[in-house]
Image 1 (cartoon, one colour):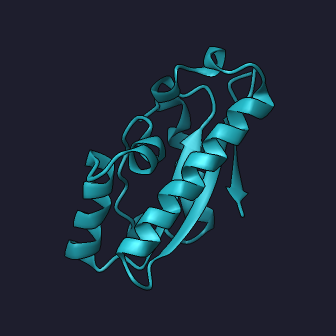
Image 2 (tube, helix red, strand yellow):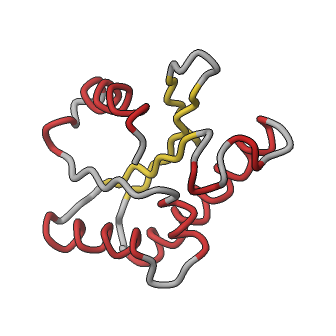
Amino acid sequence: MDFRLGSAIRDHLTDAGLYDDVDIISIAGAAKDIAQGEGSYAEGQVDLSHKLHETKTVILMNHTDCGGYGGRAAFDSDEAERAQHESDLRAAREKLVAKHEGLDVKMALAVIGADGGVTIEEIT
């Protein structure tokens, strides 16, 4: 849900051959919402995509300097920010995998640099 990511996400999906074959669900703090909530709005959107389009793969993507987390200033360091994002992505992944048998959930972090450039990194 951040205009700073539009081009980077489009390029990432195009490079993966997915751009014209995806449902893009854009919600501020979505992985956090799924990880920390029961029956969250974000989780419901994934459920709906899975039901309507028999989704096989979900890419959960957080980004640094996310307003849903209080922005970059909410963390003591870049490392602490990254650790929180990765923790929430993993927790959200586990919830979705447990709920939807056979669903492949990939994780990514869009790192917004000081110059405004965006690098998308896959989380393993």
